[in-house]
Length: 220
Length: 198
Image (cartoon, rainbow over all chains, first blue to last red; front, top):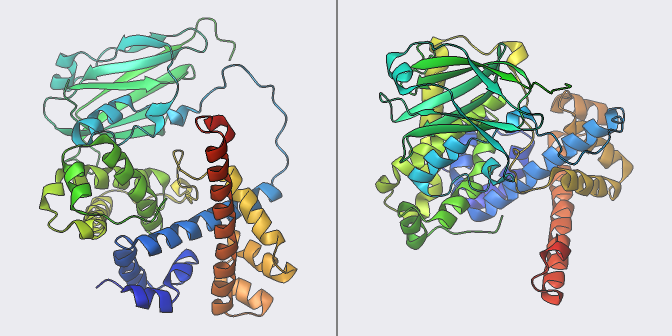
């Protein structure tokens, strides 16, 4: 049962929500309300910004000053900021622009075309031979493969060593291709794993592939 | 984010796949979902996974929405359903290990609010408050301190913490509004020169 607006105001629900002082039942009722109440939603957002800004401020005050690093012409993006181009494309097919304001808005970059998997490998659930992506220093790469025939929605995870560094939920786009752009990836060994979304345990991937990023001129 | 009321026209445009409407929908609910989910999920990955699934299902089931004014309730209900499925799936597999737990505190990398500016605004809010109140708020921001510890240390009750947060939020809001009105003024003076308005 959602909280009504007067009740939310009188009980100061927004402030108590920000402070995590509501009981679980109160929080549920307040959430049911603020998802539909523009005023309370705005108040909740403000509270969130205050708490997040405060946490960052307090942390930055307690951390030693970061060392000064030289500014380069092409600042290196974090690996986690991989552009989920396929995600954007797939979601665009569903909703027309969902992720346009997100990572896909990053500036254009050099692309090295790289066919990661052949369609037969996807359908056959075989692990193909290792692929190598050779990139010049500072160059980005693109993984491209057919969308698995068995699913309309898949989760693509990319691992480096044992760490999952990126994960995208993809809906089949009109051209049935998965494309993931890797902005300036570090050299090393990676693995891409695709699960159907009807496999929540994640124990039965549709397919997977290992690939290596090499940079012949890399000084890293 | 502006105060916004969802109407039939908005939902129609959403169903028709209008890009601007879809982008607005995503921007409007992205933070609200994050707020809800981070109270229930322990890792950024899990939050991201559930949130993506919620958006996908919202678009898949938009045809089931009967009343445009209930769009928020619709999104919230889908989120609850996806969360239940996520819990069930997690229950069948391994729980998150302690070292996998992260406390997500930022909106996300595409957040509309600039984090550095945000922290600066909080600093100004804190500087404008009496020292003791400022100290209590700082204690609240440090995640390791429980509310009980803070209340005990400063000899206040939980309601005082709420009042402090409320006051800080009001001042914080003023800085937002000031910046917004300043930007409008610049836009009016130098139309078309967006570099002056940032």
